[in-house]
Length: 413
Image (cartoon, rainbow, N blue to C red; front, side, top):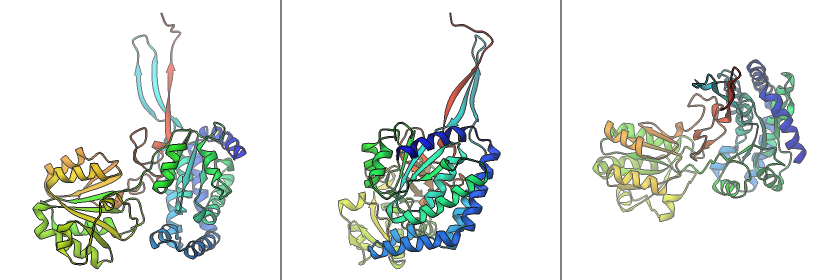
């Protein structure tokens, strides 16, 4: 692990000086390599899946782990699309001149070496590696044991692309062991060779990272996402948004986990919304009003309002208007992604202003919480903290800055 850190630091120095053309050529070569090695990657994924199924992992976990030709092509296409983004390094973020004639610029620079610790989603290997490269960084990736074979195969393909483009293969390295001690070594900073850690996984992983890390962390907390159906909402729109937000993919962090229905429209909206979810195969755990709407609803406990199910389960309750909905989201939410469905523009603007989440939506599904949907090409995670990066972490968020000052002989009095 110490050697991995030293090699990454050396690669980061080279990557920080790489031209936009070099980086984009490497990204295209990596995408081509992923495609050419698709059989090997899918074979590795089949082994990971067989092991996960033998361990009795739940369906949503299996879905996050599963690759098929369509999903693998989407991974390659995402890497390719990152090459089309503007180079984030060297951007002049601000420029001004002082009365003494000094000309000062604030310029975007790479962060350096980024450690990414993730669990079951093998696409993170490609997304994180490609984004770090585009921003001129080196990446040390630590995959979960469940996706180790698949992630290793993807990382090998990406390394081949780097070499073919003339960039250092150590710029993207997967930790070559399942040993959990490797995580501890990364959190300690690998002798000062890791500049920032990005955790991408469940509550336990993120809690450990935040507790033990000796380097800065881009916090990616659980996606405890809400959809609030306001009293002045269109029922058909609400049904479409709620169904997509919960059931499009239940195992992603942007999946809605709680449905809030305004008492002002409960008489017309609650029963159809609940029945729709139940008929789609989603279990509903609700308060008394929601239970009364459909006998198939189970009682919700206090813990349900705090649970990220990542499965076909949703908690639901009736609230007394906008203030109560905002209060619920603030009390129980994880500041990830929350949505309001309403035709009342004033109510929407209040929700957008007052809900303190990384992503807040009006009349749209929470499943848009995704860097690709933001036009970032991909994402390294959804940051829920308030420092530096927030929301989808794309190439711009993987840069820092420095000040460049040009003078003409000035000295300070």
